[in-house]
Structures are given as C-alpha cells and as structure tokens.
Image (tube, rainbow, N blue to C red; front, side, top):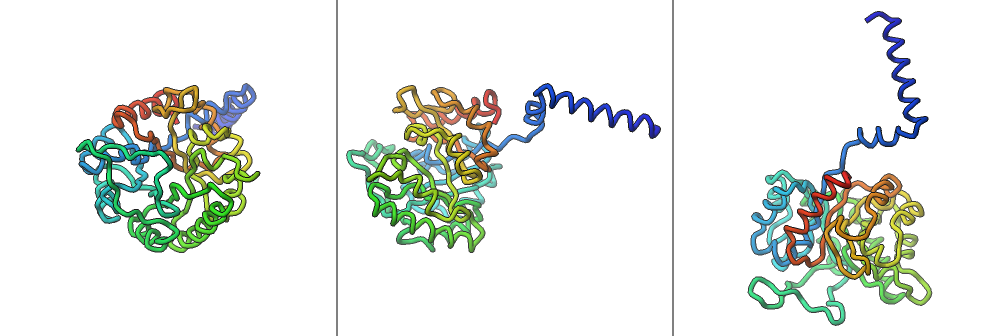
Length: 310
C-alpha cells in the first residue's frame, strides 16, 4: 500500500467516524464495541437452599452462565461451612470468580413480626451465632483477606434512630480503614429503611456524607432504593463514582413484591446507561426469598444478557 493511499484511507476513516458522531450514532457504536460486564449473583438468593448442597447449587448456578459470586451468611456458619480458601477454590473450579462477601454491621436481630423461612425439614431455620463488624470486625476483615476477595460489604446495620445511625457510621469508618490496610474495598448495602426520615434526617444521606468517600463505597440495591422513593440515576449524579457495586432485582407496580429482573417495573436500561456516573464495577442479581431460586436467576440472566445486554 503506497503512502498516498494509506493517508486517504486514514482520512476516510476519520471522516466516517466524524460523520457517525455528528449523526448521533457514535454512542451506539462505542456501546457495541464495549465489553459487557460478567453477570454476578448474590447467594442470599439461595438462602436455605445452598446449605443443603453447596457444590451442587454452585454447579447449577455456573451452568446458567453466572460468572461472579457475592456470598452471604448461611445457617452452616462461615462460608457455607467452608473456610475462605476452600470456598474460593470451589467457586474457581466451577469457572466463576468470588468477588465480594456480606457481613452484618451489628448483632443480628429479627425485624419485628418477621418469621424465619422453613428449612428442608419443614421447620423454621435456626441460624448459628452470626459475627458482626461492631464486635468481630478484625476477624471478619482477616478472613476476607484470606479468601482474596476484592470487596467486603456491610449487608445491614441499624439506622432506626439518630444514635443508631451515629454508631453505624463509626463502625463503617473503622472497618473502611481496616480493609484499606489489607487491600480490600469496603462498601455498604442498603435496604429501603435508610431512606425513611428519622427526626428530620435521611439516614442514607448521613451515611454518604459522614463516611470516608474513599474507604466506604456503596453497594446500591436498586430495587430497595426505588422502593424507598429514590431515583438511582440521581444518586449517581449527586455522588459520582461512589457506587462500584449494584444489586439488581425488580419490583411490581406497587413496589411490594420482589421479582426476577425484567419482569417488573424498574427501568434498568436507563439505570445501566449511567453506570459510568455510578462508577459501577460489578453487579449481582439478587432475589430475596424466591419460591424457586433457580427459575428466578435463570429468568434474570436471560433478560440481562439477551434484552438488556448489560
């Protein structure tokens, strides 16, 4: 190829890209070229199921196509009855990657009126004592480091009074300092309660503004935020880069029932278009206490990969 022809082709390519940009089609071109995020799963979706057969459950999840795992507490204790390195090896052997783990911020208390789900024996589940960041912070951080995960997430912490909010903020900041020392990013996971007014204050706003923005990131549960009257996109714009992790699940029109992704009313297309504003690195499908967890996560996976194309 002679020099003049090469210059012509280079110029033509530049002109073509310029024409695409001018016509408003550049975004779709670059979206097409951009790699997709691996689809992750929060294992709380299989609470009460996975403990009966940890390897078998994970094998079925891998067969659906999930590539990233976020673990939670189980009735076996520890990491589904395994040590951190054992659980990591099991996940890796199945072609998946263990990215994150959920822990409690304070001693566990059942919500008023809540009844434990039934186990395989038809009786209410009995949970082992669960460690928490207020009382067992360094042990939980050390175990996360042993497992080689990238994120440790506070799944829940009391925010029902201003004193509880203050205590939670202290725990979050202390944990964020400890995880930073071992190369793990700490984050906080919301429900809808953090968006309820407490003596003229919104707990989630206080959590965002009174924790260290580098040490304490947010795992935004999209459905719980919407249920709490929030627009996730507006949160991303107000606090850019603060939300590296998402929980993805859907809600019915009355915002009462959790549904598989794509079968409810949340506009995921709009939300995922703002993933750069959020600073999103990983997202995890979750469905709290589904009737059939396998059917739910398979439905969510198909919607995300085939329709949403996230």
